[in-house]
Length: 459
Image (cartoon, rainbow, N blue to C red):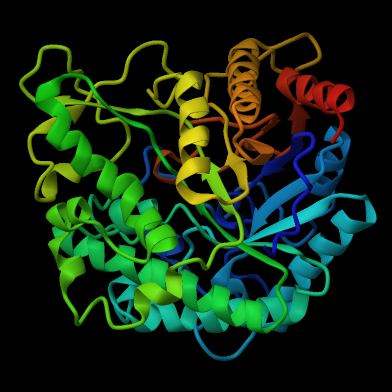
């Protein structure tokens, strides 16, 4: 098995970020627009009317971010690369200046003893490809593989851990289903086409990267425990589980879409969409699996009294056949995202995913947004609620490992407060606060807590 991961004898630690959320500089050094550059200009698309044109201003100098990572003492820094910064038109000519930035980042991390974990796609599709159909068309998967090879050719001698996609569920169902994420389209069940093309893109990229000598290629999924609150909600919960989890794990692990997935996504039975060889290419293509976890999905029928008005941040899944008559019913306590805090579900998810996939697992994102309102005399933030969240979820990971789950690492989301997609700058997940006026970075109490944890347990 190819995977440049630690042996798992002890849990490794890290932090994670994403390109559009921190880099800014949307026009620098030949970068072309991404779908998020376009989407954020749409009135009402972002809660506070903001965009990522400044973000944390991590481009062009990655030095301050590297120093923050180094100060934590962690093993890994997971970051994503901007496709339109590297291949501005989405498919042909490679922009050397864009790759220069990531080379500086990678070299700076390695010089300080931090292992880079590179994610090729964290949602910032080149707008030029969206204009040609985006993830709804098959050609985007082919172009993604070309981009992956271009990046690997430049950085593959130093980056050993690669993730192809981050949370394709969001790209497909929030981007093309509910329209709450870029590109902001609402095409109903046709969003399943995007889901298949994303997985095809992963399979094509993984195959070509392995051919080019890549040691370890994985994929990052926001797998979600789906819990039926009553017997009456069981069918709806199965449909939600199909769209949240099995539409990805079926191709990866079994090389097929199961009957329950085809019930809610019948277009996936279309031979013009899922062509011979597609699922064989995806099957067994991941050397390791990244699991992003924040909250479970509790499902109840829409008519049941226990249901809140909240939708759990999952978009308009009710537009799809088989899951029409349900709502999400998160319990308390909740984070500032209105997501239920449930560490026990993470333990169960990791054990179940270990048995389901047989792959080494890394918790590639885990963290919480809270209103950071307790300011200490030195100007830093006392975010005790975030520390409580992280402590409980680390305990869940330890319990999953004790139960036999092959979990190799835990990466906290996120290093610093940043552009939180359609919420703009209204939600803060960071271990470090970022002043929106002067972009000054100030470690929170949770940053120091995490650094102390890493010192005590080893990186």
